[in-house]
Image (cartoon, rainbow over all chains, first blue to last red; front, side, top):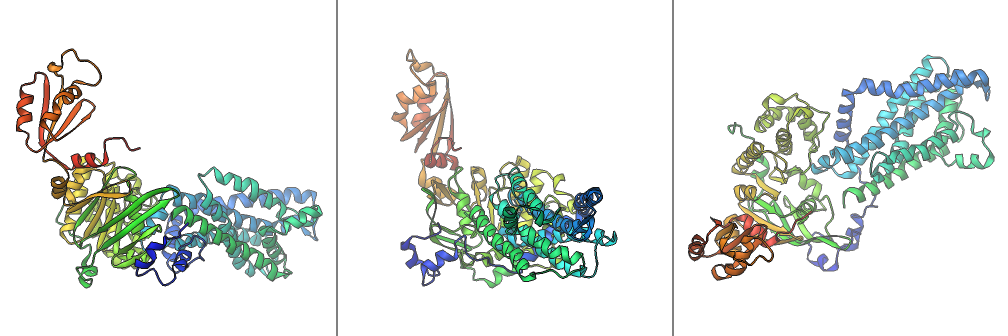
Length: 284
Length: 334
């Protein structure tokens, strides 16, 4: 789509020796070009957040805490133990990951769309010497940062409530950030495609909610039929929980490299896709 | 009020060669599918001038600006912004450019001063530098008392002035404004014009798009009229009028008693024009109830009209709007 007519190539002194190369460089699928210029964009979002921080943190905390204690005690009465631990302890890691995923998704979907489409914030930023790649990368890191706070808040709650083992708990903060990055990247793909806010409902009902039920947040994946278990292994949330759950039960996780690779792979691939789609949307 | 000076371009211009064009565009084309929105535009800004792109909606003004800023890749053409090739080095070039976009894009969650500080950071300016500059910028925008005001509390004119102040945060050598006064009341428009004139006096090059003729006539050293993605004419407002159109216009309207029993089609002005316009004027157009007669010498026509009972007329020198309508037609552009 960005190919230039041949007649132009010869008289454009800065077009470079190989015109096809230039066309490729401007293609929407060119690799992300990241720079530290994302920092002031991240700081812009942080400044907005600081003004609204308290309601934001409380709002992010309320939902998973209610699930945790509601289901933890309610179902915990019926199911005294799962895999040798109390149900609420089993649920804790699921809630940390669920909360992180939700916070990252909401930030890039609703707030991100608002900044991109409604408030024209991205447009204003791109009029300054900041490229779209920097803006989208800033959104990714910002959403992961906000999700990190949400995940940490739940982690703090479950640690203080004494329902998890704290031996490996310090591995959780970096893990939560990585999980936030992956789901922020997946959400950015939707933001790039969204015609309006209504579109995000599909993402939640068709992707996030089924994934939450299939990934071992509420019950062990082994409970599922064999066919579904195979599908479960393709979902990023499954691998996040495979890492978080043993850590919060005081055990070292198995297959760390595999699980990390899946989560990071989803993040990297989704970010590239999101960036290409956003370039096509905004740089036409 | 106009005592406040904002050295928009200070250092940047001192070190740059004064002869280099702040923006040059050669053979610019931009296609979307089968539609060619920009169909071969050449223009070159001179340092310190105000250049206006005038054109109806959809003429290609905004697309031309987006290409110039490197926000979209042209289908063909060679562009240089602040001396740097675009889009290859557009990001660096934008360091020296200030932009007032068509749509309001201020941060609604921030105060006026926060908007300026946050925007300055995108240029790599440190907070101390921007903070020191904020009072000067707010004063220039006539927003002295609004430092801590939320954006929602500002009127449309205030928002546009703050956007102008934001575009000056990096002391640009070139200021680009896309329809800066659309939607503003007359008082607010005059204040914006006042500020733009001040910036031009102080040496900033200004490129603006508009579809307001009075804006172009007031501000532009040179202008280009655009339609269908092409430049139809270019020059100073006075030259363009002299070059493109007869110097005198007589607008004829009202009821014509000389029409007689001929009642077929059109109003009285149209009926009069059909019978007599060709005798007196080189060119005429009928729009609604009015016949526009374009003439070199209005004497004979005025004498004829004075003898007609019921017809009314207005004799005036030709202006930019006449040129614009002649070149771009009278059909609605939606």
